[in-house]
Image 1: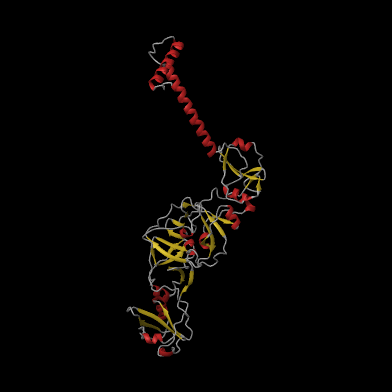
Image 2: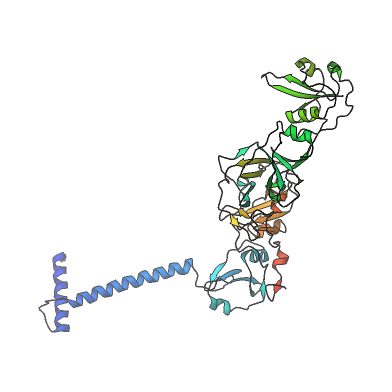
Length: 461
């Protein structure tokens, strides 16, 4: 039976073989140094590095193909960034990603290729929509939607999406006039409304406590973002002066009466022929200041007398503010939102000492500082807003036009749902108020027919 070779024997054999090789090559068996071993190690290291390099190249070739066109419908040239779209068997230079997707009818992603690969293909004329978006960013979700128009001395900013700012105060009333418009045109912004106010009418000025108040100039874009209510003026009362109804016959029609509530607060009513109408302090003062009949004090009626007659809403005063008085603030905002699934919207007028926190806005080319135009638009960076236009009150839900607002603040019309799907906008469009959208700079409409137009130049087909 053969004895197994020991490790020491193997090591000795290798040493003798290396010594013999050293003697043959260098003519010296003493082995004072061993350069052959260094050469062997270098060859081994080189082989290992070569294998690693080949492996890396193989992985890169899989991740980043070698730049051949293949059957890719959309490509970008690595060297220049030029984009080409395949129509039939011809590669056409295309203006932008939006145009390419509209032509293909799908949200294709471009393949990176070399200029040499494009040069070997059949090239057609330029195609697409000049000025369409170069990229389609992910749109805001319904929970993130909302529109805010803020006016300050430095300009007017439209913000899409959420805004923050603990100093934003709701419920304030502000007397304003459109910047660049007639000085006689004055509005009161209050609650969720804007109402015309005639400062030449003494009763209106006294009821709203506007003595000595100078209207604050604001952008028409801010006014357009707030729904308009009937003008604040003394209401016309039918059958004025005739006997009141039922238990209130001693109070003629048109009389303002007061009743105490359970929390000791006073409620105001006006006596009408068909019953009582609850009113606020402003409406009560307007009626009293224009009533020529004698009577300085507001009579108080019992709760059972109020409960014995119908409560009506005949007079158009429900949108009047409850109390007079206005606020002057450096920043005035109108915030609009519509919750997902609802068909009505909510607008609120906010005031603050400084602008709310938001994504850094993009200054528009149309900026005019304290002029009437919108100066900046704020959309969260790397996002867009895919919307369907509605009125300020939310009317038109599901029937309005489709639009895309990019993070550059430009508004693009979207032809139809098919075009939206091709652009990658598969989620339902969120509602947005058309009066606010109309203030944004407009880009071209995005539709397949327009994108498929062949062009010899940028200007015309």
